[in-house]
Image 1 (cartoon, rainbow, N blue to C red):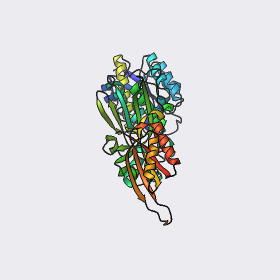
Image 2: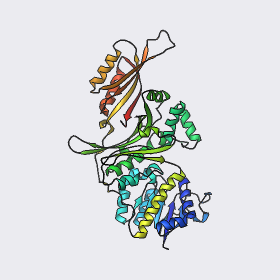
Image 3: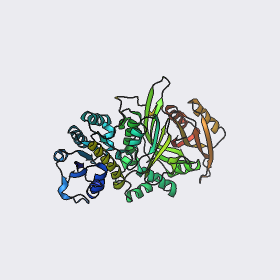
Image 4: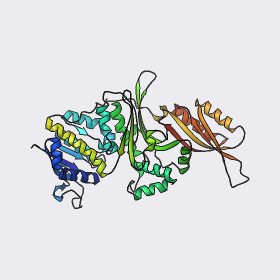
Length: 436
C-alpha cells in the first residue's frame, strides 16, 4: 500500500492525542485513506520532557528536518511565529497542511490560502474555530451555493461555563472564574478568554469564510465578560433573557446597493427560547442563517485534546485521501482581496439599559425625552423601587429600558446623555439584545 509521511509540529495536549491516534489506529486510517499514514517526526521545544503517546525517538527540535520531505504537515504549535514560517515552508515544498492555529489564521488568512493555492496543495483548519464542531466545511462547502446572511455563535467554552455558573448558582464573576480555573476550563492567565480575544480570532475566520472577505482580528470589535455582574444576570433572567458571549458575523446590505461585513464579539442578551440560550457548561454552538437553508445550528465540545484532535484527524484524512486520488484536498471558497468592514458604531442593534434613577414625579418623562432626542424609541420599561437602609436618603428606583432597533452610535449617545442627566444617579449596565 502507498505510504504518506506526516510531520507533527507541536507535542502538547492536542499534538499528543493526534500522535496517539496515528500510531494506534494505523490500520483503520489506512482503510479510509487508501494509504498508510506514517508519523515521521514531532517538533517540540524540549526533547527531554516525557510525552504520553509520543515515542521519544520521534521528537526533535529541528523544524527543517521534520518538515523536509513530509507529504502532510500538522501544525499544532500555536502563536504567529515560527508557526507561520513553518507552514509557508511546508506549503512551498508541496506538503498539504492541517492547522488548529486560530490566531495565525485570523491574522494571515489570505496569505496562507494564496500560498496553498499557488503550490497546488490544501491547508485545512476545521479545529481552529470550534474544536470538534464541524463548521468550516459547512460554511465553505456545504453552503457554498447559498447566501449566508449571519453567523452567531458561542465559540469559547471558558466564558460560557463562567456565565452559565453565574446564572445557575448565583455566583459573581470572580467565583465562577476561580472554579473554571480549578476544573481546567480556564488558564492561570484567563485574559484571552474572558476579554473575548479567543472568540475574536474565531470570528475573524468565520467572517472570512462566510462572506469571502479578508477579515483580520483587528477588524473585530471585542468586549469581554469581566464586567458582567450577578445583578446583570438576575436582571436578564427577570426579563426572559440569558447573557452569552457571542461572536457575531453579519452581512449588511447598504442603502446605496453596496455590501458590508460586520464582525464583533461581546456579552449580549439572548431570549431564553433561542437555541443558543440552552448551550450550557463549556460547550460551544454556532447558529447560521442562510437565505435558502434557513437557520442551522452546530453544537458540541469546542475545546480539549480529544475533541480538537477529532477535527484535526478529519482534516488529515481528507487531505490524505485527496493526495491518494491526485486531488488537492478540500477546496475552500476564494477570498476577495478587500471588503468593507463595518465599524461597530454603524451596526443596527438593540440595547437594554439598567439605570438607577431618582424616584420622583417626572423622571420617566425626562428619561423618555432624552432617549427620543437621540432618535431612539423605547420598547419596554420596568421600574422597581430600591430599598435603602438610610431613612434620610432620597428615594431611588431601578429602571430597566429595552429599546427598539437603532444604529449603535445613536444608542451609545443615548447612554451618554442619560448618564449626564440630573435624574439618573448612575447607569448600572448596558447590554445589547441579539437573536430576536
